[in-house]
Every structure is written in structure tokens, then in C-alpha cells.
Length: 381
Image 1: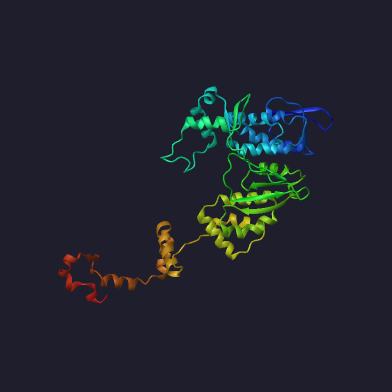
Image 2: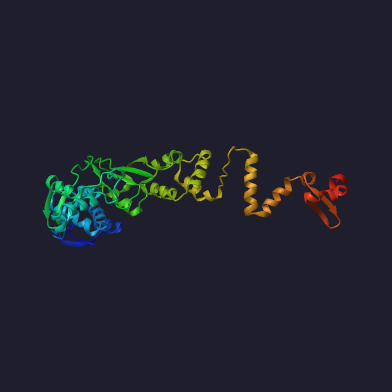
């Protein structure tokens, strides 16, 4: 938790431990702003002293900051101690690209060039080294690389250690964009751009978030209600045919309803999506409630995949399924449609079978000559 001191609307001094719940933010900061008082806990927070901020943006940043490891927090504080003008939005960008910087907080790692090079390398590739960076015939010369880093990479000493700028080309932040970042985020199926039409500020969000986090992120755009926002939808990984079916619904729904819809779809497996697509090919849906009704009843639909789409193939597949899973229903279908006399004649014609008082005797081929005069086919049954 991060303790925040602030001036209240009536002039009194207040303090809370952040991050707060969404309901608390709405209750405590009805005008959506917070005037910070002086706090000297950490450089990133000290840099915001005496500023009036969007309370939702402050809350979102603190939640992101507290998701970092202790070392990552030290790195962002080292960066902020050298540049106190960074806004919360810019700090989010620096966290998103934290691998552009290296923090060396051990004297030996700074002094010995091979240690320095290895540590910077690990921090620059936290998720593993991409293919092609190091080949079997191109192993790093750690000492030379460390010497080069000291000589050519911008670096300064801070209270947290030496901060190295490994890559100084941070992407520029588009005008009016509020950045969203989560270190746990996977590629979404759908991304939505949410815009405040009044001031043109916008934020890009994945439609797979918890509803409270999604609403909090939208309220960073300084609106009273998320219903005041304009939405545009981008398909990232959702199956294309299904996206075309649901895009009219998404555009007509508010962002929380769209988030719930996409979350439900994300839980479907491939076969269910294929079945849903087939249903929507025949039922035109442009209403969220109607779509949710179909989704809730999807288990009642069964898509039987065939190779050539013939009735005979469908019957063969279904009968095989029934024979495994529901013998009584299978037998009913067989009794209704099977010509037992014709099947019996065919079986008898292709085998040595003798009708006896005790039943039908199936004779092996090697003994069939003993029964030549007793064969059923000769009896013309």
C-alpha cells in the first residue's frame, strides 16, 4: 500500500492508503481530482508533490507500481530521481519499457566489465534472448562488451545504483493518449479505443479486464460517466467470421456490456465457436440480449462435422455416436429403418450357416463341406 496525503475540498488534510476500490474513489473524490501534499517516501511520488491529479489515474499507477518486483520499483525510482518532470502517464510508459534501462546496484557488477555486461544483457532481455541475437559462432565477449557499455552508454549514479540507458529511443506517446499497461496482460482477442469526445483524450484497452479495472481506466479520461465515451473496436485475435457477426452488437453496447460479451466468448473452445458461427449464419442478431440468450443455449446446439456433407454421412456419424453413448436410441433408429430379412439373407449368402432346433450354427470355412446339404441358402429360407 502507498500512503497518500492530500488536501480535501473543504481545505482539511486527508490521507488514505492507495490503491483504493472503485467505489471508494467515487465516494471520496466526486470531482475526480486529488490535490497531493508533500510526501517524501519515494522519488516517483515526491515528483508529484503539490500537483492536482486525476484520482483514477493515480490509483491505476499505484496498482501498476505495486505489481512490480522490488528491483523493478528501485529501477523506476532511480529513473524518476534523474527526471522529476515525468508525468504518471510517462511513468507508465517507462514501466512498459523498463528493459530499455539497466540498474546496477552492486559495486562488483559495475567494477568488473564482464559482470556489468552480463547483468545489462539479462535486464534488456528479461523474457529470454530472441533467436539470432547470439549464434553458436558469435558468443559475446563479455569483458569487451562491459568496457563498451561504460564508455558509450549514458549512465548516472543514483541512490539506487547506476542507471544505464540501454535504449534511449522510447516510443513517443500519441497526443491525448492515456496509456494502459499490465505486466500480466496477454494479447487480447478484442481491443477497444475509448475516447472522451469533449477533450479528445483516449485510451486503448483490452476487452478482457475485470469490470472495475476497466471502468477505472475509462474514468482516467476525466468524464463523469463511462456512458459519455465513444468506442471504436479493433479485432486482434478473434476469429474473423465471429467478429463480423458481433461487431454491430459491440458498437451499440456500452463498454462494460461489451467486456462481458467478449469475456464469455473467450471461454469458448474452437468447436463451440464453430457452432456459434453456424447458428449466427442463420439467426441475424443485432441485440445484446438476444445474443446472450443464444450463447446461454449454445450447449443445446450440436454441430456434426462431415467431409462431404451428405445425409448418408451424417447418418453414419450419428449412428456411431449413438452406438457409443445411447444404445437404446440407436436401437430405435435401427428397428425403424433396417430391413432385417434383407440383412439376414445377405449374411447367410456370404457364410456357412445351418438352421438347427437350437438356433443358427455358424460353421468355419474348413468344416463347411460337411454341411453342404444342410445349408440355409439351399433351404431357401
